[in-house]
Image (tube, rainbow, N blue to C red; front, side, top):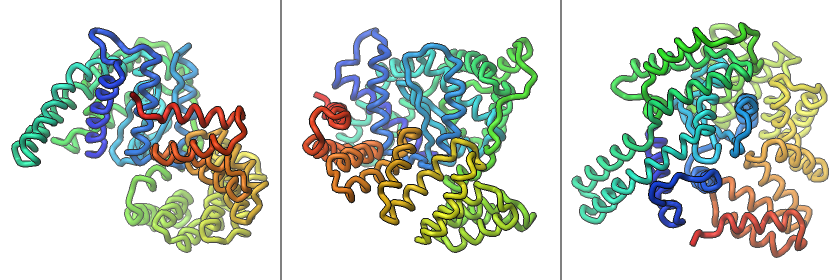
Length: 471
């Protein structure tokens, strides 16, 4: 995950520039919570334009379900936590200022169960509540200015030659070594606090033990390369020993622990997201070859073929699975999505309405949003906009960071000749994509077309202020 390391360096550089140009950089002065939240929003905008975020509602809602169950146990906090999934194969998780927490598809696919996911999220949540992120930025603003100057000097002096390249590389290494790691004290603090909220939330605290052991085994297998998680979360052996001792003296329930029945299929989706389609096809075909009745094998194979663009093969795999388990609503939903993408709207409607009418989908209540979204898209393609819009509005309400739904809503309003709302939702769409130029353009047009004083008009004005270049 080299691009993540490179991005973290660029992110630190971006933070320093924000501090310098906005006057936040002050001698011996820590960030206030309001400054941290403001900075977090700016960083999030930057990240959304630079990193590949996962848009799958099933994965997103599962992570939110686990994350918010832990947040509920931390007590009063000034931060409004948000969770995001990055499409990257290396297992990692990190927090940025303001309560924004990121986890990679690689970590989701690697985890043995939801207890390990909960352990990682509990650890990151504890970093945020203890203000470790802002403390790390305090170190960064003291140390990284020298690194930035070294890089700029190398660029000016060397014009890209070997000497300037070496200087820039050294500066980047120095920056990462000094500023992109939590201290051992921070890690121990987050481990201890994370363990307590994990237990309160009803998860098995052994999840953190099994996960850290997994990271140690991975580091040995990849040596001398260091897994990206360990590059930002140091002293893992020491932490593991302390946690094992702490668990021996900590009062905790013996179970049953909180579980997510559809976790395995979320993992399958995460695996398909991060891998090249042909790799995923080979992977899941091997399961079917070993067991021709492996439903999860067909499920993954169908998703992999869809990503490859082979919708015929995708539907064929899912149809085979449905013939084995006709009441498995996950399989019906994915087959319905395949029919929609193939332009077979009547078949898509039949499958998706069946899943919707059955109540709780096979992948749990959270995944109902996936059904509603594609049902909305099916109605939209059929020109039944009055049926599509309420479904999109429900998805937007439950998943406000789901980018695609804003594009669909904007398109519906445009076809209904409601230009103000169309521009407003196009503005939201481009903002979440990290395209500030087009977001500003559409919010400006929305302000011109919307009724003055309406909620959307007020929000468009607020968005324009947030997107305006900082003086």
